[in-house]
Structures are given as C-alpha cells and as structure tokens.
Length: 236
Image (cartoon, rainbow, N blue to C red):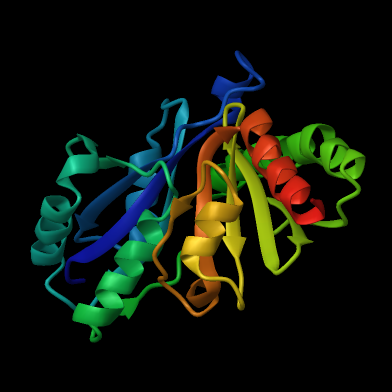
C-alpha cells in the first residue's frame, strides 16, 4: 500500500480517567503518514500499555502523502507543539486540512476508518462525560434564560436560536466550552459586534458558508455573559 496521510486525535482511556474522572484531553491533533493501512497504524499508535488512546479521524491515499505532510507541517508550524503534534484550540484543523486537500489535491482518496474497540470505548466514555456536562451545567443556564434548545448527542453539544442566529455550544476540554455562531442574514462583522469575545471564523464546508464567528475554549461564565449581553441589547 502506498503512503497514507492521516489526522489523529489523542483521547483519554478508561485507565487514565479512573485517576481523574473529570480529565479531558486538550485539543491536539497529529498529522502523519503511514505505509500501512490506517486501522493497523491506529493499533500501533495505541500501544499495549499506553494510557492514552489515539483515534485516527481522517486519512487519504492516492497522493504524494509525504510531500503533503511536509507542506502541512510547514503551514501549521506556528501551532506545532512537538514533532507531528499541533495545537487545535479552535478545533478547526480537521476542516482546514480537509478543505486544503479538496482544493489542491482533488485526486486524493479518503479512506474510511473503523476504530479499534479500545478507541471506541474510550471515545464513548469521553462523550458520555461531555454529554453529562451539557445536561448538568449548560442546560440549566439556558432554561434560566428561557432559551429553547436541542441537545445534539452526535454533535456533543446543544443547539439553540437567538434572533437571526443559530448557535451551537459544545464542551470538550476541562471546563472550557466553544460557542459557534451561524446566520444567513447577518454578516461576520455584525456577529462579532453582537456577541462580545467572539472571533472571526473562516468557512470550510457547506454548512460553514453561514458560519460567522466563534467563542473558542472559553469558560461557561464568559459565554453566558456574551449571550446575556446580546439578549439585553435585543430587548433594549
């Protein structure tokens, strides 16, 4: 099999979580290549005694994977942590790399990844904890603000609407949350003004064409303050 480019994500396993049930892995991604099938590479990355499970998110073949890997490492050098590991604080790296490959390497063939059972178990544990946080921490605050919401298990968060905006709040790292803001009628500039602490976010996919801004990796208190200010200005 020819070289395959992949993006992987480290997640905590049950072994590590038993020492700290509230632990979550920070937003880190690994961009690497393998001459083996990605699923076998995933098993190799798992190791036999490692407390951390590595899940391969996406993989592509049919291209010069080594050249693309070197190019991506250069482009992302400012966010490099060590070697092939990169900080993904806004959690946009996967979308950005996918868009880059679609645009400049359209001949790349994406490979479907079936996770190792241990990876699935670790992911399920993390997702269960994140879902619990949404119900225990976020939902009561939204109900107090009289905001109608919909918990989205597949997206690991909660969606709701405020004025001309569609919003999605998710929690993944520690006590930090991310609020993503969409609108068909409002511009990015208006979204940045309407929601204090938000940042501009570029579009990378069909749904993202309406994605205006994001408050990344912030405390729940900070995000709620932004929502309250928007609601206060709207009702003023």
